[in-house]
Amino acid sequence: MRFMMMTTDDSDQQTPPDEAMMAEMGAFIAEMSAAGVLLATGGLEPHGTRIEASGGKVTLTDGPFAEAKEAVVGFALVEVRSREEAIELSKRFFKIVGDGVGTIQQVFGPDDAPGA
Image (cartoon, rainbow, N blue to C red; front, side, top):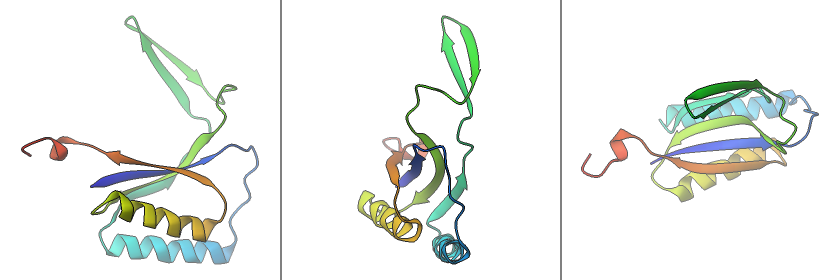
């Protein structure tokens, strides 16, 4: 089972991480990579570009977006045996980084289709 774990931020101020936290996060990422659990991870620009299609017309809008109360600022794509395992990894992540908000969503693809 694959899960996308995303962290969000609703503030304009980001405090840079200290060296100890970066070292602990590096060890956590190395452990998950070595175990074959971590498929991808990264930080995201906070504002991005919105693409909207309607009636055959495509519109692009550059952020920031005033109506957005929070933005996804980071993600990890993991492959684990269960949602519970994804939740435990997310708990470990927040023990390292401290306060925050995240979302865990299962990712479906061609290998997840019935009979695959």
